[in-house]
Length: 249
Length: 164
Image 1 (cartoon, rainbow over the protein chains, first blue to last red):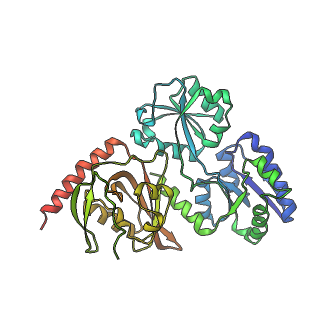
Image 2: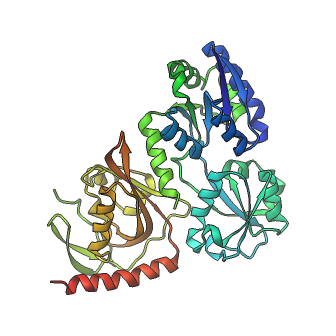
Image 3: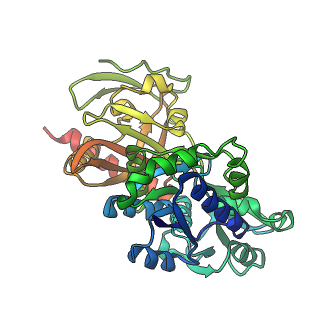
């Protein structure tokens, strides 16, 4: 059986090889012919999903919500200790001392990543800012978002925490985090299409057996998920979706 | 069933009688002290259909002052502060039971008589078309929103006290 394995486009470029290694690992362990799809943007991903090309998908929590509730996708596993947290940072010599100092008209740089924007918006609520109060500047990469803040072209940048922490030491010395989220319950999820649910056990078994194994752990390390995957049952996925729902307004 | 006892701090010197929705009454010891909202975090809890707490996250436990063991199995109204009008909670439960999302500003009571303000969103947990419980997620509100809520709730409580 030939299946497509789609990975949401919000991983760091240095993880690209890791996803190819995971695809190869899963093929070997499951005896399934998997083709890795790495769309370059959220819209490209949406088109592939609409064409029915996502048999297996490592989805961000937003997309996972609609894919589970509207399209019947089944949650298999989620990464351990890798929740989708957000850092809001300003340039190191900025007069901003805390999130509460942000004013209407605040300029924000960020990548085209819905969960970063949503969590970021929740983090600026203590300053009484809404989406309409902010001047948005969407950039191609998280490095570009950081650069915009450092150069003073924007007041703050919204970054996936993982991306912030992976910035070079030099870049980080030029930034100052104002807040970092600690939501913990929201993460990417690996889903399978209902038409291949009979393969779910095989795939889950392969993914859950990676941690600590001779051939699996190096792949996890390459993915930046050193603690591996943990099973996610239907109720846990539903709970995450309920939680996401509360963040929408 | 009775709540785990409060442990009023030294500054919790104001005694307030409080009547719960189920007819129970208690004398609460309150302080004016507000606990700061834990920055960047969500305060999450789940209840069953009867409002009994079945799950709460670490932030919920920490700010409440109770232990997790004290909270699980208790009615959610253990957090109820007498400065929040009855009508707010009635609206919350009526909205949830109708299968809809509720949101609003809430002052919650801690074990030691202090309090904290949240922007709360509560959703019914729909499973297979049925409501099986409720989830509530709280976020940090702005000072301006808190001040607006304080003024509004004072008026509402005054009206409730005037009502026959």
